[in-house]
Amino acid sequence: MRELWVPLSGAIAQQRNVETIANNVANVNTPGFKKDQVVFKEYLAAMEGKGAQEQGIDLPQKDWKPEDFYRSYNAEDSFVKVDGNYTLHEQGQLTPTGNAFDNALNGPGFYEVLTPNGVRYTRNGSFSINNQGKLVTDQGYLVLSKDAPPVAGSDGKMNFSTPPEARAITVSNGKFTISLDGEIYSGENKVGNMAITEFNDIHALKKEGNSLFINPDQQNVKIADIKTSINQGFVEQSNVNAVSEMSNLINANRTFESIQKVIKTYDNMSAKAVNEISKF
Image 1 (cartoon, rainbow, N blue to C red):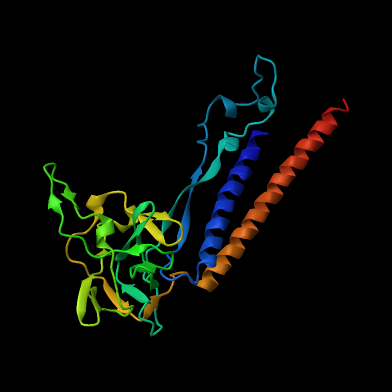
Image 2: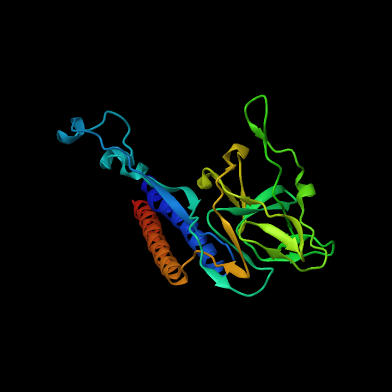
């Protein structure tokens, strides 16, 4: 029964939707988390135009197959699939904590951090200091200071020359303040400028885990006119609306269950057909 693929493809796509929404709900309290949404793509088999098939009964001159006894107009070749998912980069609410290690971004920018897999970008500003006096994220990744201005290469591309390891921020006495534009002071001494990165196309970023993003093209980095500010003593909440997302999760689960019932019905029909034919 080829038409079984229609509800089966819907079940696979809806399962992906349920997983995505469930992940959004699980991260409703993750600072700086940005919700994801799934995009579906539906393929409908084109129906044949008026022709011989609509001109009465046609008896094919061949060995008959089940397909010869009904006309589905290729409906059994229709299917739905997940065309991809995208991240909503809407600003989350800023909540005051009074903790100097909590720093929220107001604007489209990202913190630049160094992970074992290379430089990544995050909105999660819950920082701490490691045993070497370096400013790190809640996952232990080094928070980076602003890089030197890029230099145009012979190919016209902008090159960044300072190694990421050299841009780690050291706060020796464990106390620091950060201005709105990212200047970091330990006492009265300025120890660096926080690297706040904005992008020409924010949707070109690829999500890695729940809090990190990868920039696949260095030319996507915006060089000037940075509008993002840092608010020390604040936390940016996730942009997930818990009530709305729970409602979406319930609806997605119900849809998935309905599709499962359709698949079970097809299975029962197939089993009954086999049993009935075997009696002849």
